Length: 207
Image 1 (tube, one colour):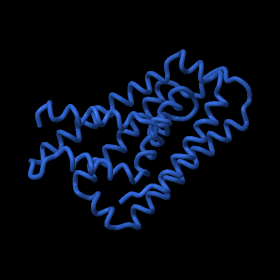
Image 2: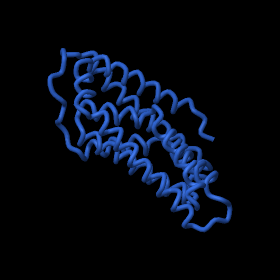
Image 3: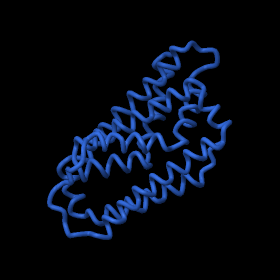
Image 4: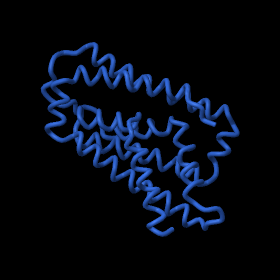
């Protein structure tokens, strides 16, 4: 696929993945609270989850999932439950308060941050449908398989760059210090936004 055809797809992709949502909320919050390493681990976990859905959609399994409504519904409830749990954790942190934080929270492994990012994406059934829509629009009918790989890998590469820059930006010293000074307020906002995302997943039409 010529770069002139691929570039508009990638620009639209950046706008879509950088818009406010569960993944961007988790990346920004983790980077501000726990630092660069955890922010990057979570960002790359999100990308890994996206890669799984890209493979599923590219293999044509997205349509099969839609045909089995019970599977999509199961994922919908699992995703909403996970986001609700994140909302509860943020709300509990906001409620407890404890004054101004003096240092970042660094306990926990990087693997847990990576898994958290992957789960945010893997439990969102809209992700595979989004990938399916991208492939349907971007890949011409009858195109060879390598075009599908070109589009998919290009979008994933852009995701890595976008989420990495987001994690680096939010983990910067001035940003993290501002977060630590107003941690209780940020936690309350994150609780509300994660809760709203859970409701959106439950109420969204997926077909």
